[in-house]
Length: 214
Image 1 (cartoon, rainbow, N blue to C red):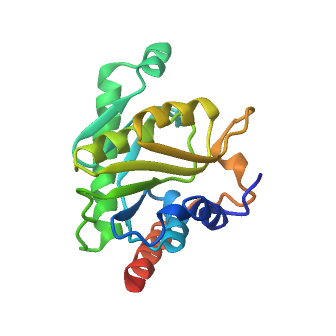
Image 2 (cartoon, helix red, strand yellow):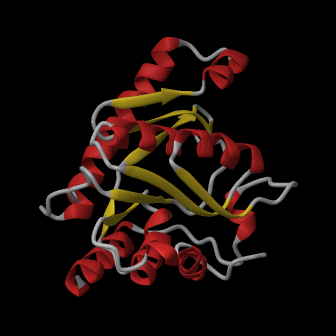
């Protein structure tokens, strides 16, 4: 199945999660930027508040789409040790990428929340949403960081993902919902007819719209 766009995918994902609808202990956290349009529709479908959970991929220099790891709020870093070893990436290169992405993470924190405090997740069921799973490095960092905040359960929900990655994430989360796991998976964007980049402004607008509807 090819989704029309991220919001179409979010509506489908929300319907799959309907058994969690209208429960006061559910919070939807979306990974910006691409996960926010998906998460917005999931939150509307299940009647839960929406917030962002900030994670940044550490891209391989010169091939930034390939993840060698990821960082998340709270000082969490997850490294793809096999990628780093196979490509012979040095520790100073990894550290330099980490510093750059930490700066961008802080910028996004200011830009997206506009002074609003993070959603309270302790004791809650958190639905952690992205637009897809490729290597899963970003999602692994998000799960590790989120566990530190003591939610009662972490449910990872994505419209499309690599079968082996969805299986690996399912072992880390309390539940993993991947709507489409094509055996010939090549990239997240292949699951969408429209995979235009989500802008900072769109993220802000969707978060403000969700907050106003709460």
